[in-house]
Amino acid sequence: SAVISQKPSRDICQRGTSLTIQCQVDSQVTMMFWYRQQPGQSLTLIATANQGSEATYESGFVIDKFPISRPNLTFSTLTVSNMSPEDSSIYLCSVEGRDEQYFGPGTRLTVT
Amino acid sequence: KNQVEQSPQSLIILEGKNCTLQCNYTVSPFSNLRWYKQDTGRGPVSLTIMTFSENTKSNGRYTATLDADTKQSSLHITASQLSDSASYICVVSSGTYKYIFGTGTRLKVLA
Image 1 (cartoon, helix red, strand yellow):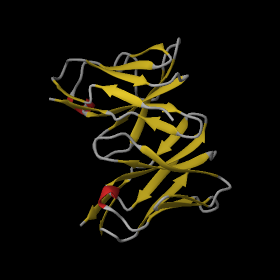
Image 2 (spheres, one colour):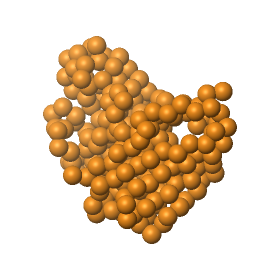
Image 3 (cartoon, helix red, strand yellow):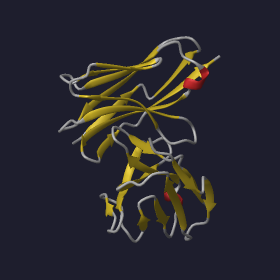
């Protein structure tokens, strides 16, 4: 199994600012995934982060808005840039284990 | 279009009662189907994972079924407890790192 921690757990930010979310895994993993969960909605994949290469973004998500870093095999960051109220969501980090997917506790972001 | 639909959207039951949540999917190719429990303010936690050839899988009071012919799955909760109050998410994998998430069923168990 994998234990994932995220920081911050929640934040309230003003529009136009940026927030960087950190994700730490207790074991080395090749792929890390970032998801967004808007209120009342299911999870939507933002991007896949490989160590040592550029992240791969899903349709509708761009690097300028959601830059991702993956400096090593246990850590990744997601930045939500130039925030607007529409970015208010829970952001979740995830890794793939042998037979299942593990999720972090999430970062609840509110943009005012 | 790959889709995963869950019903009901929300459900309220009394403690000790049983309930069944439904998941219908149109995903191809199919790799496996997973049920997750997501407590408020937490990330999803895996309950069961089933491949094409598996019909039933249990995890304590949780029993998942899969009918690959009709592309339907269910999650049955037996003797519900207050701690079962959560969202339950059905996820279908269509290949390596490809997951289609349902919108979830929000379950509330009352004392």
